[in-house]
Length: 129
Image (cartoon, rainbow, N blue to C red; front, side, top):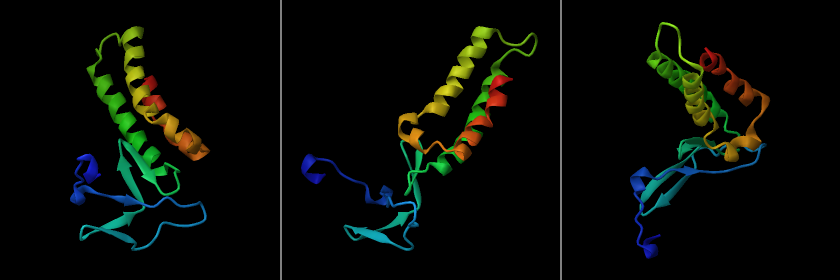
């Protein structure tokens, strides 16, 4: 990367080892870069997605559910209390929350198990109300 004129901040560097379903994450493994020890982690956040070594995205969905509920509730507080919002307004707000839910979908779609689907369904009631 140095040859390309790019610099890496070693203090912000993280390492993740991708492994098969039968192997667990390594315990106590680390990488040394320019004298700085970087521990290999079981999961890490990258571009808004929580990655793990098995590409299961379990923790991503665990954290995504409450974020969707909070976003739907925050948008709901913006709506008028009397008479409720119009259908166009509801459609717009649900689109915002849907976009949050589907962010990174081309990457995690293969990991969408029944458990992960259940985690995505939980916020739907708040969004629908």
